[in-house]
Image 1 (cartoon, one colour):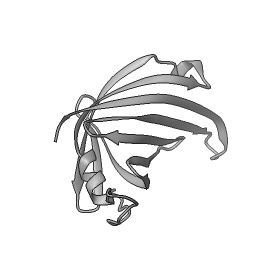
Image 2 (cartoon, rainbow, N blue to C red):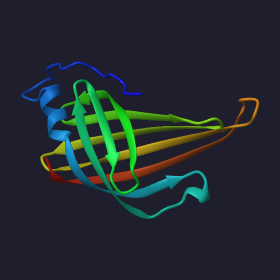
Image 3 (cartoon, rainbow, N blue to C red):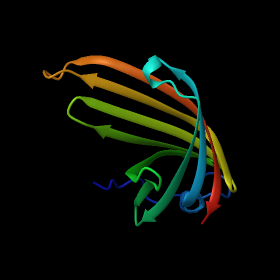
Length: 143
């Protein structure tokens, strides 16, 4: 279930891919503020969450110690200190695509998180789409 992502490469300036990924590893307190939802059933206000990020060779594992959720994430894009990654979850009748974009600044980060939930009927036809958007802020708790 673990997904390989890009290999270490140098970026412009003094920031390298490997250094930025290592800076991202550790425990984070994450606050998210919902800015949009296309379905009132998914309305929330301010959420507080915890992420722990671990790197095992070329895999990054994101864990939530409160909900016991765990996911392998793929870093799709890096520009300066901004990371864009994607997480896709698929069940029998639902597919969730989450695309956070965060900019790391030392022991903090800020960015956005977009979630698209697609629901399907028994024949595999798309019957509903829900879009949800958040502003996210993170504060590093430890390395």
